[in-house]
Image (cartoon, rainbow, N blue to C red):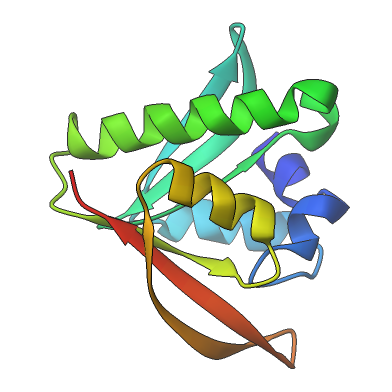
Length: 138
């Protein structure tokens, strides 16, 4: 289900790699991962994933499964992920990369106390894109 969520066209469009991930690539990532991966549930149903890799995080949701409930789920996921990062994990900071044109997620991060600390260019499938690093502390 995580691979299906990650390969959704809307998720790929705002990701740092936009190609459709093959099952063998996904299996290799799972086998080699050092990150903590949590499944987010909405009303008891798996609906997204949060990935913590040290003090860096990322997430995506089940776009099709959530439908019109996507925005409220984003907000709940971010709230719960931040609480988990600083509570359960005891992280001193939490940060992540967002494409500059992904204004909805940047606004969501600001709402939850993240601040932009830098911008830089990164190749996304061979095309230079501006990436925004946002970060917050407990």
